[in-house]
Amino acid sequence: MSLRIIFMGTPEFSVPTLQALKHAGHEILAVYTQPPRPGGRRGLDLVKSPVHQAADLLGIPVFTPVNFKDPEERERFRALNAHVAVVVAYGLLLPETILTGTQLGCYNGHASLLPRWRGAAPIQRAIMAGDKKTGMMIMQMEKGLDTGPVALTREVEIGENMTAGELHDKLMLTGSRAMVEAMDKLEGNDLALTPQSDNGVLYAAKIDKSETRIDFSRPARDVHNHIRGLSPFPGAWFEAEINGRPERVKVLASEVAEGMGEAGAVLDDALTVACSAGAVRLLKLQKAGGKPLAATEFLRGTSIPAGTRLL
Image (cartoon, rainbow, N blue to C red; front, side):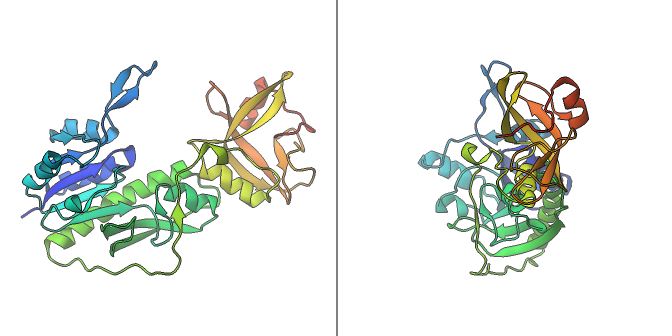
């Protein structure tokens, strides 16, 4: 026997879970994902989401509603007669009619140790806050934002130099395995649910452009966490005068270093930058329109000598 599943997800993060459920022998009745968005080199083409593309390759029907306000859309969901819906980074809040539209409910794969970091950007927020560990949780969904009871937890260590991109990839695979295990338990009527604690609730708000600029007036550890928490996207950045004009540069990797000086001052020829306490060494940088480069390669074509002030 296998479960009849509706899968709901959109970005690359969701794809391994869809593939793993299919490989495990469950019947994927349909995939729900965000509608195609403008893309391509000029932004003129409509590009399918990564989940949409993966579903096409697997031969699974795909639906892309803007929302579930239309009664016909809600009825189509119910008419699939699924055992369960699996949700991984879908990108839409689900109304109660959808949450109760399958026999066994909806289960979500969320990239944090709930109730810490409920919401849109748990991976980035965990790193920016300096957390030493995070994880994937499989929870039964309810009307609140990531408030449902937890079925399965898999912890993941966060290395001191790990970027959000690296953690994303690790959690992506951890989550796919956890969801398969949870669905196997659900199929065997052996999936226990534990209510979330009311203590330690934190919300992982979506990253705003206004918080991507590097503030070297903070301690070095905080600056380092900020940089790696926003790498590779959207990228933390500074401005400096380069070749006689102000230029914005993204920093995609760094490390805490020794050094003292005025916050934002470059201390040596290896891009060690003073913070309010300690210093950071910038390891990987990217100019606007350029490709990411290791600091040594970046400095071959761009002069940022000691004494330069980064803003």
